[in-house]
Image 1 (cartoon, rainbow, N blue to C red):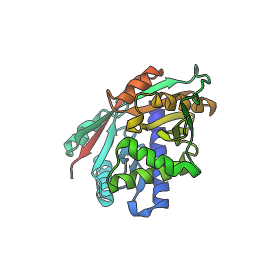
Image 2: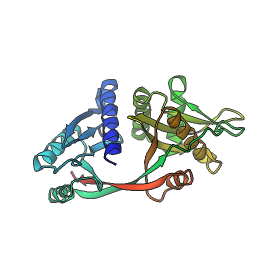
Image 3: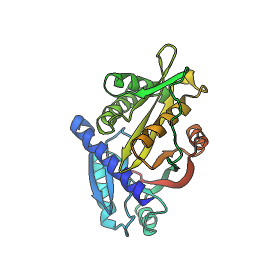
Length: 264
């Protein structure tokens, strides 16, 4: 668990660094704190919190005060992830400073030892890398799948794809209809330190219930195994359709991440 959380913190920090390089207008910054990483990508972006802090010992008042000051400077509420690997004093300290329980995500894992090649490019759905010339198609597909219709949501979604393409190599993948080539779904994959992390996946509403997510899962598991990974991990909303699909493909529940947020 500690290894995975530490890897996720490092990957998120790399994302923030690249975002700051490509588009400084987001005000992104990242820094080490209490054995973990604070990743502040900016208002409207998906990661603005402290990740994997307090796994090697207590977190101090000064640590959280620094998190709060830098979060305010970036323009986002201070937030911190806690898990069963966090020091037991972290939750009590955060609550004493006004933090409240926010979102929860379930972390799933799957060994890749038994993954063998099975055709995901069948007669119905094709899956392939979406980097380079297909990046704009991935952006449009993701926006449709997630329902990003307003300008702010679309801006964040499109910028996420640009940065992910830069830091994750071939990690953005696109599912298309094998008969006419139209895009029907998309997903992300990050490979770091021998750990494969399956990112969010979405399907265009009109194409749901035809196996798009299954094809995206199978493709990424095989890609991770081919890259030498021994384990695949992912974080999902509890009880959602993505979680059920992943469990059907061999994933098992591992631990829960709770995000504590300090209201403005």
